[in-house]
Image (tube, rainbow, N blue to C red; front, side, top):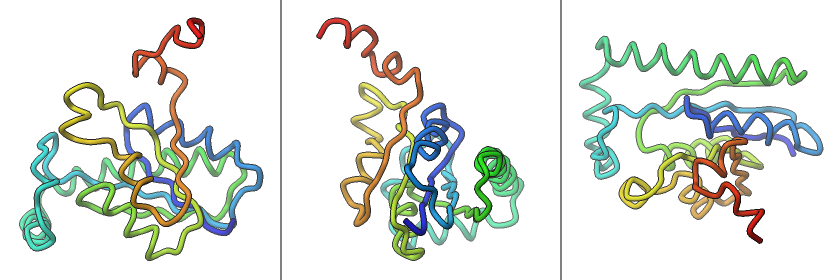
Length: 169
């Protein structure tokens, strides 16, 4: 395996990508860390915008304090994961920031960079929010041309209401 794309954000589910990566049989030659910024905060409307509207939104936000804050937060997130991976002995790590629809951007980068594997964390959406916003890992996995690994944090069973499920089986 030559190149791995690891999509990260500031959620608990995303931190699980570190353990998934560390459990790979053989480390790749290069890791690409990607953070996709959500331009409008908690609104779900971005998923309904086309490329032209997204481009207009990007232009209108360029140079604003809001965009600068998004960039600072993205850098902090990427620096955290980069340090964690470097502590594990990995040397060839590139970081990348994109904005827009997360699944689309992850898949675009995977294709542009010709990665061999995508690693992403499980999202924490459940109930109605999962129906409305969808499930990022499922969307990436369904549309990806390369294998996708989804990391779940140790508390995933609790988050998804599965605690004790193994004991019942």
